[in-house]
Length: 414
Ligand code: MN
Ligand code: MN
Image 1 (tube, protein in one colour):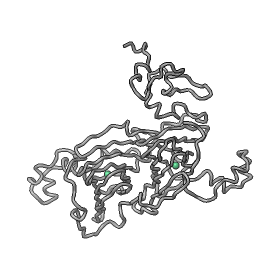
Image 2 (cartoon, helix red, strand yellow):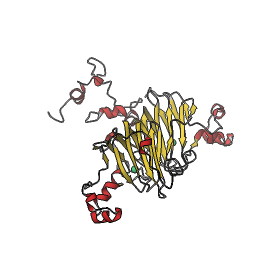
Image 3 (tube, rainbow, N blue to C red):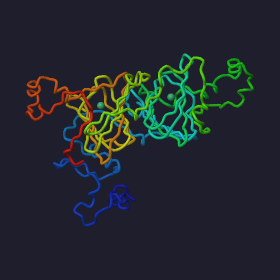
């Protein structure tokens, strides 16, 4: 077939139900989005193109007129990452290598089968985790010999401080979770693992260290295992190990979904940081639900960049970067979003189901500034003089610091 002489749409999409070409219709390709704005700006895209992606990203194909400038990419999908497959599960990661602007945090999406083990290891970064589905058993031992063994399930978090050794094992049914590290350049593939260290230590040294014969190490793995399949562990009591120094002073897990949410007209919010999860000294987060028709209000964060993970649904976010620059991105379940420090933003639910996502910060505290509240607590005449807005807006401003999600009918049709 001649690459420059094909009817791109006919040949590529005619067999796909979703792109059914309507013969005799004025626009037979009406299901195929085009980079054309309502006012007529733009023109059809003759291809080659990835139409599935264009359908997923309507506000990127046809950006709002208010978008301007050259804000760098603020989106990366776990579906576009390298997948590491193991017996026992899989992992994929989004770091500054994939999303260069994400310097403060890196994320890993990991699956463990029933009994699957993410092996005993440690790393230079703190690890924060959100259990998406299923159950796991986590273990850790701190620098004072105090240990921690706990089971986590859907909606639970864990936090392992930098340098503290730990493990994760899937329980009955297996699990999938999100890991977040307080350094964008972290890689889950370069952690300090117990098998790697054994493999790279002379056997006579191992023998001297543990006071047993070299023969005891005859069958150790010759390289890092990272993840492997093991037996499903029994009840947590059967895994109990009594430390002479006791258990860690602060729990390393937290039941975020059990927290009573702030309910708002447009959704719900649960905030977790070192004030209610004391172990989590360098990661703060909010679990946000935006109902269909709702939005996360215009706001910014005065402390650090925001790293987002979309759990369900679809949404769009416009980031305002000062200097006349703004850019809109579409997000869906499995995507990571990013907002550089202090940049203004909002998130709208663009779908028909709830949009659930995590806002995560490399910070001790969750902090945000509401545009609405800022205006409400500033002299009225001063605000009016800036914006030429009428009393209707000035009277509606909220003075209370609050729940961050509001209901608001969308006025466009995307
Ligand atoms: Mn780890
Ligand atoms: Mn935010």
